[in-house]
Amino acid sequence: MSLPVVILKPGKEQSLKRFHPWVFSGAVKHVRGNIEEGDLVTVEDSHGNFLARGHYQIGSITVRVVSFSEETIDASFWHRKLEMALKLRQTLGLAGSDKTNAFRLVHGEGDGFPGLIIDMYDSTAVVQMHTVAMYRLREMLVQVLRDVLGDGLKAIYEKSEGTLPFKAGVEPVNGFIWGRNNGTIALENGLKFNVDWEKGQKTGFFVDQRDNRALLEKYSDGRSVLNMFCYTGGFSFYAMRGNARLVHSVDSSERAVELTRQNVQLNFPDDSRHEAFAMDAFKFMESSKEVYDLVILDPPAFAKHLKVLNNALQGYRRLNAKALEMIAPGGILFTFSCSQVVSKEAFRTMIFSAAARSGRKVRVLHQLSQPADHPVDIYHPEGEYLKGLVLFVE
Ligand code: SAH
Image (cartoon, rainbow, N blue to C red; front, side, top):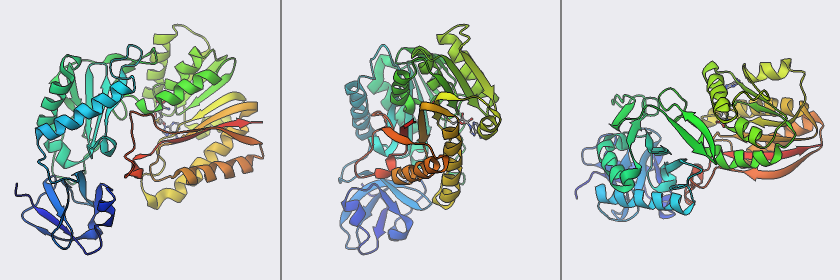
């Protein structure tokens, strides 16, 4: 196979030798052969030794590695990877479960598919590409998905309009690339929710909070709950099943609030314990006189880049300090950050200073992360993005 070759500067092969799957532009000496964004390339050290095969892209990450072996990267290679991904979800009790049929089947680098996300909602796969290489492979991916999932698959919806590099010269259009299915009611731990992959955020639902929602359910009995940044209301209907006394859901998006109302109605018809508000989080917290026994803060990623990290941390701090003021003595705070650039340590330090500012006595009960269907490649710690703390507030 004659592939273009990306040759590294002397000494720049170290991270690849430790199986880190990214080559940064600063490590590249030159490129041999014609190359275009999205091409499969071989990576060599400065002496011409093979290091890896990967997908070429323009930007600070130049190559995303798909294999550290000198093997052929073809449909059967991807078939094997997808089989492995499915097997893992079967091991986790997700694929084939009658209580949960919404889960992540492919989590980018964590499953050896750099730049690709696949979420399953019952028999519909929602596919999101973040690289041109994966976008170019989509026909092959459709075939591989059909082969591996068989009868379990009825439709594939592609949603890459907002996730492919802006200047890549490809023009993705969201829509079904195989089969068709007009929305679905999916299940998570036995609770029902509508999934709107077309208009919803991400692939339609935040599957990454499944385990954390289940934990919340256990703390909800008899409590008044504020679900801030509720989106489609996931935490709210778990709190209700956990016997919460009252649940207030808040999101600045009218559409999100509407989806929350629908989902609550689906699970707990005409239940007067729930109320939803379309309002900015800070405004809600400033104007509310309510004191809650349990608050959930699951804001969007305030920082998408390192450059804005400090501003983001200030935003998180202000939010958490305000939440701590609204919590009744003996109350609980579930607080999260899904910004990949906010490290676990930075998150904890930020919570520490929010707690100090509030003057409350605060103890850490749980340290939370993303669920096992969002696996982290041990050589690629960047794959761990979700972090959360459960705090007991005296
Ligand atoms: N907790 C949710 C996911 C939250 S995603 C779940 O379990 O599914 C973040 C949400 O924050 C989005 O729905 C977005 O509309 C909302 N949001 C963003 N900025 C906001 C703001 N300033 N005030 C309130 N909600 C906001």
